[in-house]
Image: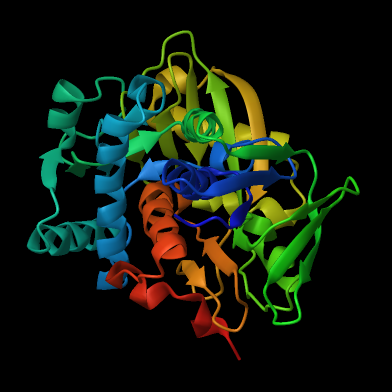
Length: 369
């Protein structure tokens, strides 16, 4: 059993998953977050567990399929899945011929990769799955029955709680300001913004949108994209939808018994035009009301613009940096889908040194000059 003290910087779904896996294997873990666990991007994303949107590279698709399976295992292991795990499937359809053809082409590719895919008509979807949708009868709708949505903050709370019960420490409300190293380049100390310091041996950079700044503290260049996204929550007396869906211009999913989450790439494109979050929320609600009329008058509860943690080439950066002993990265946009599998694989690698082939294409050294 390793005796090193491991600092996990950033306690969203990725950091919580890595720390939970380390703690239950006997490692000495300290969680560090400038905010509170799960309150950052994890709580302000569409939180859709899938591999259907990950076909650009087969190895990336395979990693996301492994992420879906890791969730099913997690639901059996962690407990209280009703509060955070919602495997109700996912719907997707288009409203123009070119987009529709692309959607059906992707569905055919996924079927050839043994991914569960069903094509239904709008009328079938209204009759059997989502009666509240304003959906043309004949439009083809792709249904992915194995996909899910996750309440990320509830899952983070569950993972962190179990890790703390296993001995993990917590330091919240203070950001990492400095990472001290030994003469051989290994990790020695962390200094926090509240002036305190911690002796540590290993650092896991799971800091999401701040990952590049944390990497810079060890003179590591981690190039990141800037891709802000806006998410809105609506209050509903009765939630009119039962699963996550991608309508042509807006994404909609339940968020518990009295809330719905909205997101749209089209509205994201307006973030830098000067529109306030409140204006963006109104536009999201308007788009949602065209798909689910019952949402048209729902009260806008909360809206936030958050930067997505995306490495420059769009793929995860997971594992050690060979030139920086004791420094590891766990940085990716698909954090919701990939959190549990990356947490398991990276914790195992930290403790045993064994590299898993699923991570071969996503190693941090590809960004090393």
